[in-house]
Length: 490
Image (cartoon, rainbow, N blue to C red; front, side, top):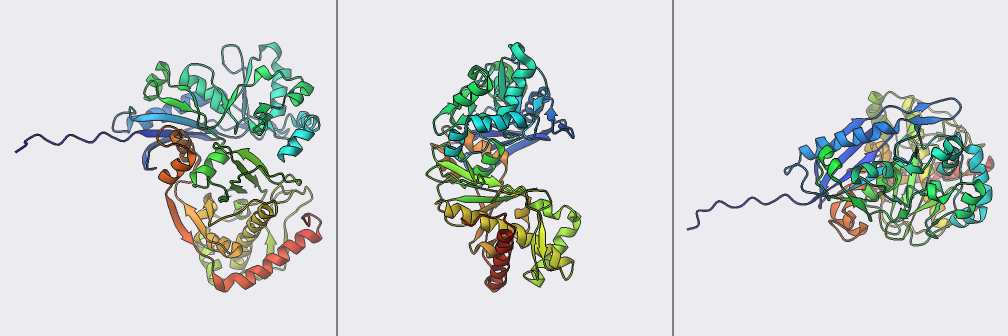
């Protein structure tokens, strides 16, 4: 009889996703089946924004926050972090840091919503019109390309590099400069189709290509964790540092929408639709634009000016009761386009667009229901636009964002779309970054990572009895947009 005690099973290999958001850093550690093992967050100083359109944050605060969140995460793991085989960083799209020869910031980071270089971006649009038109992209007023030129004009010969957030963090993780990924590089002027920076635009703007980093595919290795970072974070020395993607792309990946035809609708402050297509599709209106998928496909989508912000005047504590009342009463008696800002950018582009109502609400529940329906109408309009552009939309729509936690809203969306909506667990940037870190380490590719690690949630079916009324309201909604000249016929 064997009297030996059974040997303990060693913990499974794990990966970490790092989300450097606007207000905080979030770190999540998961295993190869997507099970959360540990997580932590650390606050960041709020950006300093001015009426002139500038938006800045102290980039020197990022690494201490990342290091703190990583240390608390690894210390909670069974092996103290030694089981972590890879990390990836995702951050806001278009945030830039001017750095000197020593890699230290020359000034504050220019955030994704900084508009100081709007005039420079207009020149970039003209200089690269042929390239941008072929890609279906527009160099808007908040594009990072103009901010890179602004940095050169401001810091002159002291400027050695202009880095996106992940490369700035990557230098601390590895101890040496690292490439950027083609997702974070998009708004800085990188052409993922041609695999090059837009050199003719850089020449026209007087921006040397040497100021920008080299570019690689998300999920490829940028380096390994060095001894100093290992000491500061608890990550094992030699742990793989993988190139990530922007927060929006990582959020999409976190839902499992990673194969052609799959789409995710995200209701946060604004509404965002992202999907996967086999081929690059050009939208002449500029509403849809595409990031490059890590496996070579494309990620078409866009962000509306409308979304969860339509409920900004409602106290959060009131929302469950209003949702229940809206569900009980059924389709709204009037139609609402719940835009609170000036101008719309997706699924159509119109600077003249303004919110409107067709009819008046009978009561508070009716008004609430009309707001939820209005965002669902925009979602349907966006999916129909995708299909007119030749992008197949297959299966259930994946749902994420704060709005997806509302069962009432999700049922309305399913009914308006006449397709099931699947609410996905952990549809967050840090989890998407972890899936990217698992690509090539725990799993062969991103599709395999998503298949093994994403846990799908509830599938919400359309409500057949509400379809006729919502179909009629949707028709009135689209007609009103066309009558006002905001929605093109094609």
